[in-house]
Image (cartoon, rainbow, N blue to C red):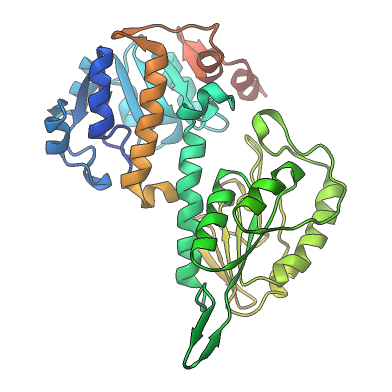
Length: 383
């Protein structure tokens, strides 16, 4: 079986779907790697590194589509709606596409891929079960995101993070609040603590308190008597507007006590909950920084603008997008391992087997036989 690796075409996407060392392990599974030239350059993986590890480099993108049985991408056309259109003509019936597909909003392009007769797996839909942890691209990329968010905040805030005892006096540590203790939030806590900040963290799911405290942060208990806050797979789920109003009021007091706020609260397939009001921003000290990692889905802060930096009331509010692409070497390494593990599930001895009785396979399969087959995604497309 031949697996093709393409150079990513989404603007500022520097990751690559497979790295040389991980790709070399696929040969033991009867898989040959075909890589578009310079596919890994932006991530720090030159063509020669792939060649050394047994991959074949081809100069023509079309050739990869023509020869590969399976295409691995960071962003399939559903997650790359503009530049991805150019690839549609090359996709053939029965070809398997695996990667990020933006399944909740990339409906037009995912439908177009289905109409080409391709088999499409959306890796964002990997179920939150123990057996699938090694394939979970959302967790892997959230790790990178949480780490990089702290570095961005440290560069923007006019303070140093650690407590310093110097001949010039004592420098008090920066105070950091992390909102949301998923993978990104927990990594942000750990990174902030390593830099020496005093860290608080809040999550609507009281069950994560132990994880927060194990990393050396103080758990913020707003005493709101939350509704059932944890949904399927351990993700936070949407709550009532009355709860959100009370939550925003209580959070405003905590936000005002901190110099840096990193918000990560997201609900799969839905707009991000509004947690930080403009009044809360006004109450922060001048020079404070908010890094809103939920910007792509509307943001947790009322003043966030996706992909931009806003200065309001003396506070800098950043809405970064696609932070994993800014750490492409290790982000690609983690992503590639996720895909290799998934390939190990559906390809045995170089033979592709789509077992719909396997929860991991059925939950990630979007398109097959010319149509959309994932019931939840099909319903969303029809609504």
